[in-house]
Image 1 (cartoon, one colour):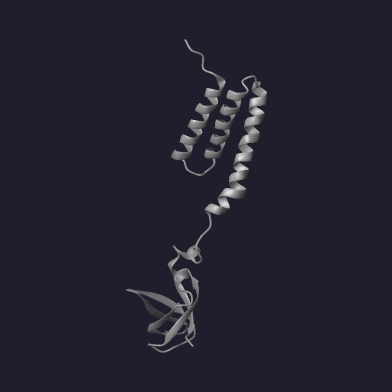
Image 2 (cartoon, helix red, strand yellow; image 1 turned 180 degrees about the vertical axis):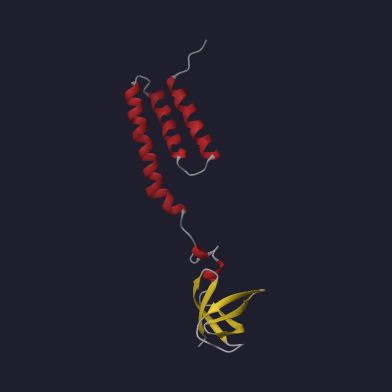
Length: 148
């Protein structure tokens, strides 16, 4: 029978953690898995490390790997194009846009046509056909003012 070296156990743990990351993504287990893989390499190079030393080194390597990700890699992955923070919030993309009233604003309420839909607006009383500019959004309500 062959004997399983301890560094193989670290590599198996690394594979399990990385596989766990694939099943439940979140970038957390990946970095701890990389620390386990590094422990496997370290133990392969220095097989005489005690179990306590292995545990402490693994903890330190896992913390270092997670800090490297959080401080240097994560911010680079989160860079976005200007305006993309509003990409999936359609109403906020309308701020600054101009539309024509399809229902006059009476007592602070009216409607505009946006594409093939209608949006409720609030603002100063204005007659049908007036051009308004969207100033803000409150849920599905567009807050408008008369366009200049």
